[in-house]
Image (tube, rainbow, N blue to C red; front, side, top):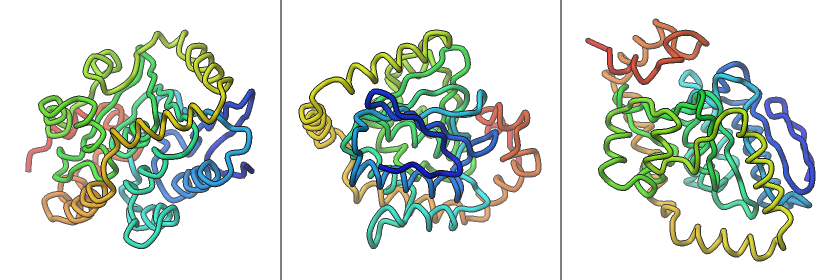
Length: 278
C-alpha cells in the first residue's frame, strides 16, 4: 500500500507500520486528519501488502487526540462518510471499519485522548498508555451530548454497565492507572518502557503466520464488536444533541475559555465541563 498523507507520519519496518498523528498540537479529528485516516484504513482493508501490525501514536507529547474538531462537524463527517456506503455518514461507522481491518492495530497513547480521540484509540485492537501522562475521557455528557463515535459501545463492553455509566455520564478524566484498573486499556506502562514494549509486541505478532492472526481477530470481533445499527444510532443521537440550545450554550462557553486551543482548559477539560454554571 502507498502512504501519502499530510497529517500522518508513516514508517514501515519488519511488517509493522507506525502511523504517527501529526495534525497540530491537539491532533483534533478534523477534515485533514479524518481524510488521511480514511485513506489509511481503506489501504489496510483492501491491500495491506506486507503490513501485519499498525501502531497509531502521536507527534504531540501532550495529546494523542484531544477530540473531534467541534467547529467542523459536518465537514469531517463528510470525509468519514467516504469510508462507508449509504447511511454510514458518521465518524462512528468509519471507526467501526477501522476496528475490522485485517491487521492488528495498537494505540500507543501519550497525553490526552478524549471524546473522538479516545474513540479512535478504542477502535484499535489494543491500547497501551504512558503511566506518566496519558489521560482518557468521554466528556460529551458534560456539554449535553453523548459519545457518538463508538465510545458507548466499546466502553460498555470493556468496563461493564456500572463503570461505563460512571465514565460516560460523569464525563471526568481517567489517568492511565485507573483506566487500566477499569479495563479501559490493556496496560499502563512507565513512559520510558512504553515504546520498547509496544514495538516488541508488534514485531512479535508481525512475525507470526498472518492467516492465523487474521482469523483470530475476526472471530474475536464477531463476538465483541457492536452491531452497525447501534453505532449508527449513537451517531444520530450525537448529531441531534450537539444542535440543542443548551449544548450550544455550554460549547460556546467552553470555546470562550479556550476550547480547541492548547491551553489550560484543554489540558484539564474533564474538570472544566463540570464547572459550567448557566
